[in-house]
Length: 131
Image (cartoon, rainbow, N blue to C red; front, side):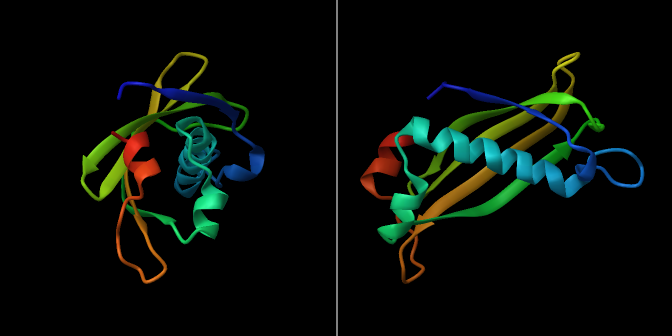
């Protein structure tokens, strides 16, 4: 599985803190937005899965911050899907500033699906998407 998804975004003023840089929590919003845009391309309908009792949950996020973004910076967020274990899947994600392709954030997101009783499982369509 080597397909990499990219989405282009731009920093908005209200995402910055008093120091004039993007607040650290906003990087997780950027990463999540990219994952949600990518899921349909993997054949996964987040809303339908939820309605059917398949709840996708993040188990762990590891973030390495390398350089800050500032208001007005344009950037890309990439997603590369990974199969981690029989019950876990994830994404290797990076944020790069467009002006110079500087690495801003390197992240690994580990997720699973749970049923309505809270038990982890991977339905066939998720298994296939992350094979």
